[in-house]
Image 1 (cartoon, helix red, strand yellow):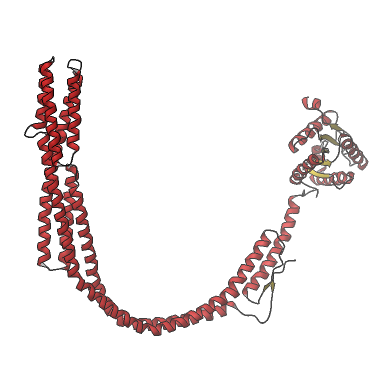
Image 2 (spheres, helix red, strand yellow):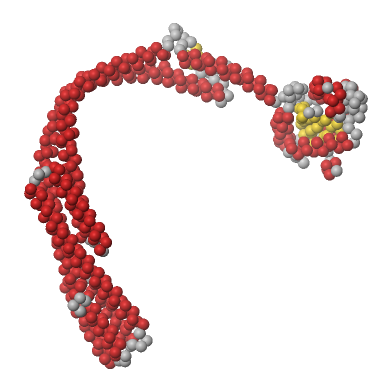
Amino acid sequence: MTVLATKKGARISLVKVFSGGLVGILCIFILLSYFTFTRLLSFESTLTHISDKSLPNLILISQLYSQAATLLESTAILSKSSSNASNRLAEKQLQTNLINVRQAAEKIFKNEFLDTQLDTIAMELDELSALIENRLQTLNNIEFLRTQMYELNTHALDLENQLSPAWALGVSQVLVNVSRALNEKKLQRVRFLFILLKKQLNELSVLFAKGQNNAEKRQLTNQFKTLLFSENGMEASKIQYLRLNGRAIGRENFVHNLILDYVAQLGFVTNETEQNITLQVASSVIKMKQQTQLIRSILIGGVIVLLFIVVLFQQRVLKRIRLFNHIVRRETQGFENQTVLDGNDEITDLAEAFNEFTQTIEIQKQKLEQLSMSDGLTGIANRRALDIRLKHDIKLSVRQKSGVALLLMDLDCFKLYNDNYGHIAGDQCLKDVSKLIGDSLHRDSDFVARYGGEEFVCVLPNTDAKGAQEIAIHIIEKLKNMALPHKYSNVADYVTMSIGIATSQPNSILTPEAIIRQADSALYAAKETGKNAYSLYSPAINSK
């Protein structure tokens, strides 16, 4: 038996309890708000001064430092530019950063020394940008000459069959040494490598003087010399590039130091502002600590009251609601519940109402289940109950290795009975026949159901064909003895029945659909033989 609630003592309304608690909390909150507001008014002026003047200056100083750091990054990017596009982007970014730094400085300071230092940085950056641009032009010229030299080498390889192999090999060695010279970063080493290249080309000149095709050899060799040693050749361009690169590095370092010095000057100028802000904040904090002592005391009292209410709420409401939820879940899952919910309040009332509701639902559920499994006219099982029982008995026969017999019965000429005697008499006839069939079954395990209309089904577990035939004969004989009048039948002057029999044996197990189908075939055969008879299913009958 489910026990949901027990009432103890006088009734205590949760609405009154927690309404009083909320009123107490509200009073504490109003009191706390009043003292907090009055104490904070004196603090408002200090905060207003800090927020309107001091903090904006701090933010601008932070932005200025950030812009100065970005200026250093932009300078490094400009110095490392390797193409005209990247150089233009770096110059644009650098100019933007200079403008931002100048605007941020003008908002905070009116310092002529810092403005002059920023102008110097801008001028040095312009000179650095010019050096970078010249370095890029020189680098582009070197790449252009390198491309022409590769083309000459390709032409020399195409003429390898016409020229001497030794000469062609010497040209390839010259090209390798040129690449070594262009990749070198030290000026003295570059000069030394180009002197070696000049010697190699002179040796090639001696080589073509002794061989054949002297005109082509002489032309290619002179072209190599022009690319390497002319006024704007590779040697001069490489030397100029190294010089420009060294000057750019030195200029970058100089600008870098200027920017660092500018940042240091900013720190010195802004230090006094930061100290003033710190003093103002410290003084305000001390006053705030003094003024919040009373607020703290009120707050502690309010927290204690709130904790008391929370504990009361947890014990009297949440805990019991959780217990009630456990009761509801067990009831809905079909388990028996022995939990006790004590008290004398609204939750107890709710538990009692739920208990009454579940009992009502259980009664209605049992009635509904009973109605859904029985035939409304005859009171025996219906088609749904038949499907469940037949499936169960076939599965049981498989485990027990036994047979199941099924009798499908149909009243002969029942339409004529309804048409002439009326539907009320027809319904009474179906009731009488269903009772007769039920009385003809001797075992509790035997099952009878209305299949539909004037058809009935008997399921006989652990029964073979011979036993099923005996039941069929017995039903036909009892129906004859009952002698329900039916003078309009073309079979006899009383109500008769035809029966089809099918069996599921351990060596030939049938599904519920198959055994019903076989019984229906046997019923059809019984009808064909003159009705008022039974027929046992056989494949021969089915084939006909």
